[in-house]
Length: 148
Image: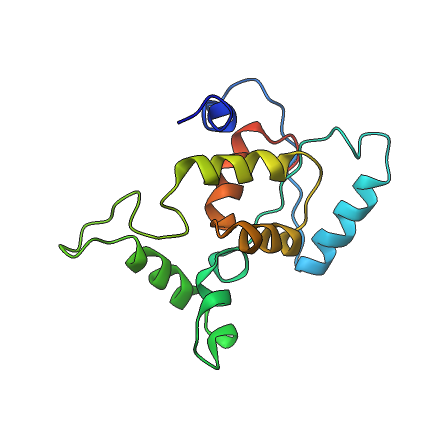
């Protein structure tokens, strides 16, 4: 890994970063909350990450050619994601999925997600723009986030 991309990945659990955990029932409630956070004096400096499932943040559902891809269940997309990470021998690897195969790209996206409070839809949009899995980038960003 390059020095730039390793910044978020090198943060370990129990590293002293205080975390505020905020939960909501819907994505729109999380988006609304983060929009309000951005209006505060901490809006530009707070490291916040909104978490979504593979069906929302991952690229599999967005890139699928199936007409009904968006209506598939979360369990379906979890299995699809995990299957994409398997080799031909059936073992999971770190680089089997083309959207997760570049660890530097995932770490760079994680850093970008922490640069300002980012909601789930924006996280997914950024992942699509750089063809990198926003689901795994957001998971990597948790260790350095102050608001999850």
